[in-house]
Amino acid sequence: MNKKQLFPDKLSETSGPYSHGTLVKLSDVDLIFVSGQVSVDAKGNTVGKGDVALQTEQVLKNLQGVLEESGSSLAHVVKVTVFLRNIEDRNAVAEVRKRFFKDNLPASTLVEVSKLVDQDWLIEIEAIAVAPRHG
Image (tube, rainbow, N blue to C red; front, top):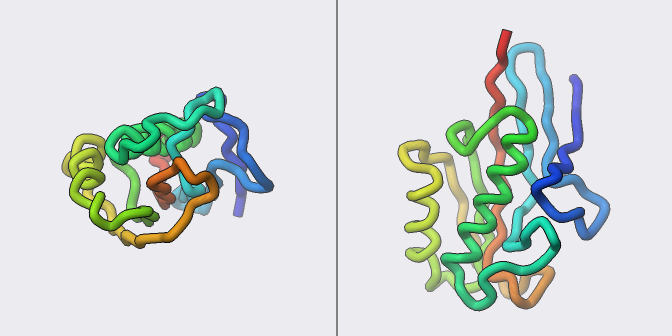
């Protein structure tokens, strides 16, 4: 097994001892495990304070950035776990997810949590995806 840590230039540096994602190369498929992404831009600023829809957009852009770094895309996501501070925001999050995932409907788990690392963060999403092999 060949494993590569993903630290895309499009994202801010990690805030702790973890990578934004991990690419696993197996004999016939590459798996990407993406760490929980939050609403932080490349400069480390929280985007969309108080607005779960804007935060979800930034989270999914960050997720997309990690996947592109490994040669994959949102179309290849097979599983997401969504951590949401307020379960009442579920519909707003779903609307944004529909725009990003389109017809690709990954397996999904949604969990309401009391806190995330930063009090301004309303959502965090982690994912598992595959990367297509070329050649």
